[in-house]
Structure formats: C-alpha cells, structure tokens
Length: 171
Image (cartoon, rainbow, N blue to C red; front, side, top):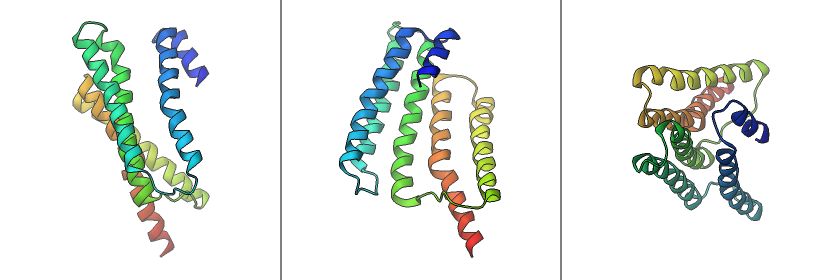
C-alpha cells in the first residue's frame, strides 16, 4: 500500500495529502473490522450489521465527494476516484455478506481448474470495467455503476458460476 501511494504521487495523479487521507480512512475502517473479527473468531457468517455499516460508510464517502463537487470545493476529476472507491465499497459490503453467508466460494481444484477460474474471473472483470465504459461513457454515475458491478461480479456472480462448475465436475 505504501508503494501504491507513492506511485500515485510520483505519477502526479494524487497529492501527498490525498494519499495520507486515503491511508487514514483505510485505517479508520480496517482497524475496527480487524478487531471485530479477532474478537469473534468463531463467527463463520458475515454480520448484517457490519455489512450495513460498511455500506453506509462507503455511500457516505461517495456522497461527500459529490457534495464537494457541487459546492465547488473540488473538481469532478479529483473526486472521481473517491466516488468509484465508495461504489466499490458498497458492492463489497453486499458481496461479502452474500458470499460469506450463502455462497462460500471453493478455493480448491486442479491446476487446470484454477487456471480456468482465473481466466473466467479476469475476462468478466475486464468486460465489466472496459465494456461498460464503452457503453455508458465516462461520468461519475457511470463510473460508480461500473465499479459497483465489478465488485458484485468478483464477490457474487463469479463465485456462483465457479461453485456450479465445481459441483458439475464432482458429479
């Protein structure tokens, strides 16, 4: 994470203040979640309350960025990443709840099956990220939808397809 932040500064797409703020927000979310799970190792299911909290935090991040754009505090190009991250966080909170409680993605398999999983996942992600960009264009709402759907693909749709394929293989 430190190298990613430094690379964003080096490329000139973020300021040190942006990167530091991102680190602090990440810590503010990650630490309580980590402490929660460390204190509840017996929990195998995702907590709907925690998922709802993550969803609301992510929505607040996107909403704050949109409000700052409308107030003229920042430009849309600068707030775009914040909106995309918030949308991805909303997708994650839903995907985590559903995957952990209902899907339980299989991680085992032969090397060939693992390679197939990788190719399917990457192809779906590329199709959503680039294909929808071609269809919807570039705007904050379309970017948010793409990132939300990208995470839903990774956390729900793709695992459902792999689980069904694994069942068929074992039958």
